[in-house]
Image (cartoon, rainbow, N blue to C red; front, side, top):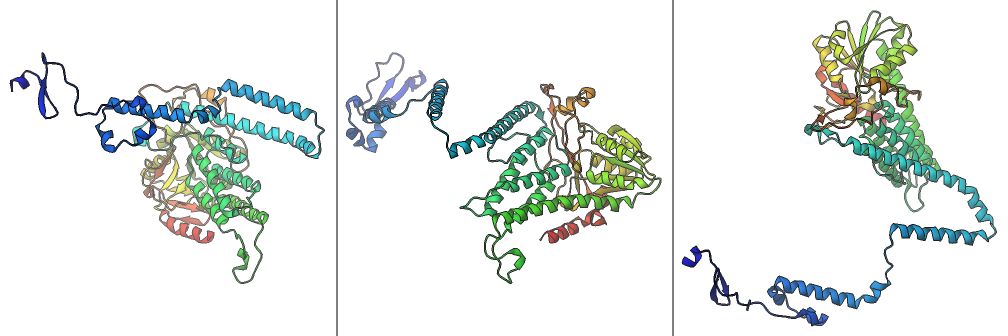
Length: 529
């Protein structure tokens, strides 16, 4: 006890306890550990060691044994290791490549070009052009990666941190050129709006199928489906896809999956034998289906315009927010009546301004009032109808649209103003969404910091329109803005309007209450099948 209280330590060596501490004799050698010299041991002697002997070794002995094994390995494989090519630096690799090119040029200069060489010379301009396009696309991709890294410096609100970020994927040579260009436009914000994005996606898929060359050792339908999946994933990485884009993608994949690989043709219905379709015929079948989807989009918007214009009478005051292609056609169709239009505009996209320019050119006699979002409550005092466009109509009757649409619908409901929603059937979704937190998309935080509207308006983006391909002026992102330390940014692009704030839905099938969305969804699925 006195030894323990004085701060001494006890240790057992062999069977007798020995006390070590201040003033105690030197510690005796550890007699429980074997003493071995590994520097002279051979590989056979090391392999003969038993597991019990390995457990009894100290850390120093294990380290010495490991070092001896390494020496024996190097001595045994000295010739093989010496024969390996030395690792060259980047400068040495570049020098060797230049020497190989020079030697190749000297060998080919003395030969007379034959037929193969002449054909190769004819194909060189095209190869150079393709190589230049690939380099240009790679440079654009690197530029987008740098811009996405700069945008990532803005801190997001923690509640929305689960939402996908705008990250530009790496350059993939297997991606078709039209898909790569479209992805860059998505990431830059040059193509906005659900209608324009779906229309551009279908055109890009059409170009992909036209240039598609099926492999000889694989089934065309499966290989083409994988190419389409990879292209769609690339577009989604550039910017999250909308629900209508997902609906169109599923429809195209169903068409590809039904391509007859052998035996009977689809038109025979199993009743009579028919030869299998060739690869060109299968490609033509897919292209025909894509063209049909594009035409159905246009016809659906025109049908909505014709049906919805019947509800607008002389003296009506219509209020709208944001931009929708179907809503623009509806308002153009109703120009034969003398109604007044109130356009509510909001930053950062200023889609109301774009709608204003389109309508003033198409309907010069139409009376239009442009109101900022802050004057919404004042503008609703005169309005007797609200017409809105949506990005998707969920199966529970809720509408997913541009951020701010829910506020407009709720304000209209408070003043007992009916809200009419224009929605094509391809925008119907089987899913249910109750809020805009679980599923949404965040816009660039730099748009919230821009205060110099004149400088941004002087540098418009080139935006491809959905209907005619015209150019429109939207605000460009100011790359000079920097994140403010300690500040969180929240710029949601969409919100959810509950079913209670929607009075009527107009589609190409006619008017219906929002509760009938599941019925219309089933009818659309039956038509596709």
